[in-house]
Image (cartoon, rainbow, N blue to C red; front, side):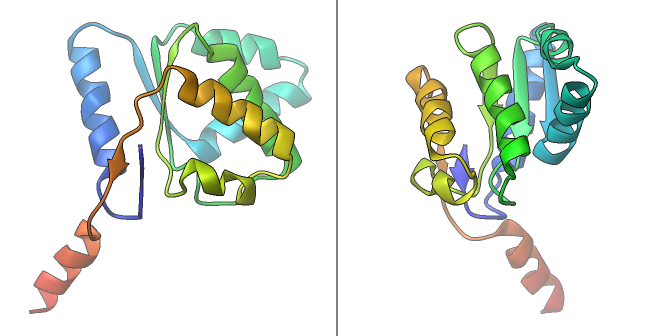
Length: 144
């Protein structure tokens, strides 16, 4: 799910996740920063495969805000490991304020970025959220 800040990406994927959970499907929602920290810690402890396997108990993993901060090589590496691990095995829903064309600005390794995008879009439905920021609109209404 791609779109500018404040257009409702997180709200949309949270609603999707809630609906799936209501239908009995196991869903995990994580902010990208928390997920990357978890995976980096596991990698440092030589337990990355175990951490990825623990996430396998969730049929759907929602990763929120992947595009807000440029990723280091180490962060990019664990995110790629996650994407590769879940590819054709379990669903992954990602929100980003950057379109795929701009992901080279987020990740240091171009080859890894291309491979990650290739896996993500292979079976994907890409949702483009457009419009103005609802937070800005709400703030403006409060000021009136």
